[in-house]
Figure 1: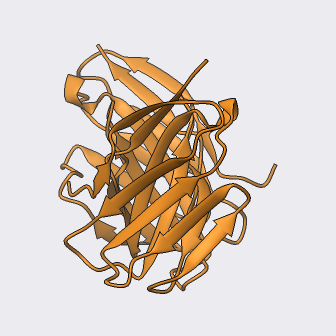
Figure 2: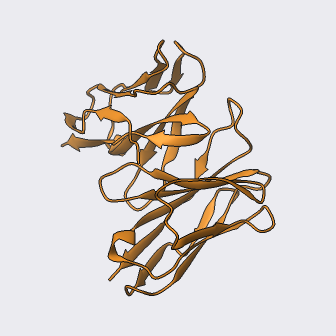
Length: 108
Length: 115
């Protein structure tokens, strides 16, 4: 099935660093979503974006819905150990189409 | 707990056996979705229901797969004659509808291992 292009595939950072990841698509979506998934669990919604150009924050997380409606980015500021996990973008046009995921690891 | 629940959480079966998974959506959520996630990949859409009507099925949903939502509440996903390639996490999600702001919430998933 189709998956969105998400980068980077993995990140190794130190606690306190900022993180940036993005997602691109060849298709237009009317909603962009960012989820976090811990091992053995389902994805948990972090941020939802509903309008092109929209910039939304949720605590240390900031995400933007690209003007072309074909891309989105997620920033995490001042990372902490509980940020470890896999982050997925998803575009919605009825069903969700997910990105390939970004695995975030924090180096002690 | 008012979240999406799935049962069982884990299932190990032998190739050729049939398995059935259950999903209980958030109360009053009209839409229910099934996704499949293999190791290292994002979830992939399988099918969805609006109340009891199955409105879309992915090409990933072969003839061995069948999903039902008979009363518009819980849903079951059955896989007949399982194959090793069916090993994956099966995720269920629900939403009120499809309008902006009505996002999908996921359950914890059922992890299937076919030996």
